Length: 213
Ligand SMILES: [Zn+2]
Picture 1: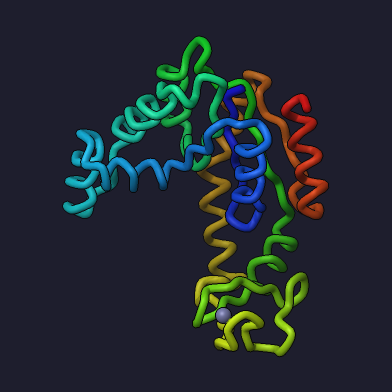
Picture 2: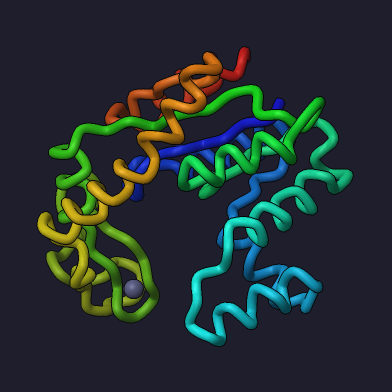
């Protein structure tokens, strides 16, 4: 089964992607990782991407699409793939439609939805340890002593962009970019909305059901 997963940062997309990968035994293809790997291995596509990045330019869609095609054609994708972080815009979705055809075409789009207020709770309550990078949450996963890491005794801090204002900007941008993508796949009848505001195990049950398990 060929799956796209979509959802804003804080929706639990990373956790669901890991569970899908392990449970359904299909590779999780994050476009960020795919870029880093191509650049590290100095593939032709990686070198081209690097030259754009060095010039401070955006990597063109055609290059990203070529990398995705290359990746989903690999043997480990014969039983399907889980694509994460792509497509991010309507032109990318249309390009993907041209290269992912036949048994590579997208079967399902999982759309993790979460109300803004819940996203605010999740993100603004997040605390990180300066020492070991452990992640806490003031409500759902507090440290035993406020401001102090349970693991290493390090100081906890809040990321400077984990504020309501910057979250609003990020979410607006995300929604403006992905709305046309979701409309494109909705017309094909491929989108399944998942209520990602529920506890993780309940979200996972919805995902499994959507994937026919
Ligand atoms: Zn720590």
